[in-house]
Length: 492
Image (cartoon, rainbow, N blue to C red; front, side, top):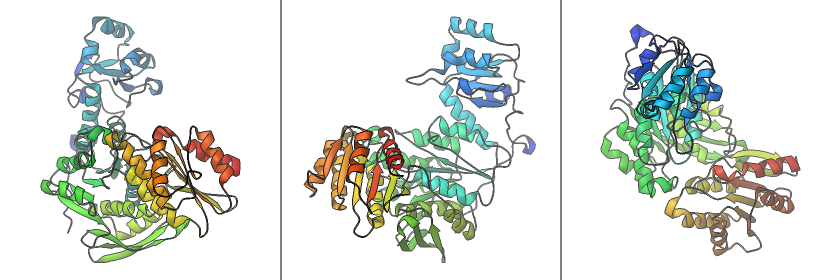
């Protein structure tokens, strides 16, 4: 049986931290800061890292990055009637800057100086999290983490108000800003955690202090920052290391590398997958093409049928992970079935559109790595109409480090083995994709490189015919959604 969750003591006699009520002096301690100007009783209505979005009464936190420095906008934030600013000690220590700001300050505006504003943002969010009773779920993995986050939030939302991060707010800035939106009335928070290098999942886990952690899988993603698959696994397992002894980890039990690395930490693991030994497993999987997928979900002797409205066999694994979150938080099985059945998909993530002439357009352009590409190509094959052709447009996959050339070569091989009618590849590593396809039997006339979105769209429009399936996928920065838009605008 899965053990009970811990109970957190309420703050200030049961009153949680709340924007509009909290005072500047109360956040000085959690951020290890110093109130260098103004009075600690000043109320803070919110927090922002963007001076353009500052509302009167907000605290402006000046972040400093490799390509930007928010300290250059401190005066602007004060001019917009911010309650005050949080700045770095080394910046405030410059007499010229200090004098400029003091001359701009209104009598009731505050300045809090901290050693590192990014660290202070995370520390504040972590402290804020501890002031609320909401159950926190943290989701990471090489693929499927956003879909799993959305599915889990959909299930938990049936039982109480649930916070989740939006878009790509899953890093050391976006996640704390999301967590700082927690307020009284929220029962849950489901937070996606992304990473580019070792230590980031560890830090995000410290901030979120999750009751339930999820690792969807380990694959070739962000290799530039971690080196190899072993490095990816180690980075993801930082979540297992950091989760509290009372926390639970929902983990892909079919991923041997992941299971081996997670085992030594002796945390409570709730496994999911197709293998018979998993805590949650799927059987009788039925692929209904663009209509979705159904399967039987098994857990502790119980079973139920889950029907997903979204296509793609990869969503079975995502659904199992989300169901794992639900059972850890003792949600009823009916919520799992309803929540998963209500999931309608995400833009750019295997979204299916019907075009005139019985043509199917599959938009998977939000992002790409080798694991997600291989998985989705299997779903594409299952969706193709009998006698219909498959046209594939691929953009390059980024941040793969030393595995870049081989990964793109393999991508071409997979497309050829799929039996695709045509491959159009775009980006610096398009030649490797083309060579992989040719070496696996695709002819030169059917595999080619394109230099622009317009050229890819044009070639697809020239070639496609009734009953074709068009599949588009690439890393976010390649922007293949522009090809999707061109096809929709031209054909519809």
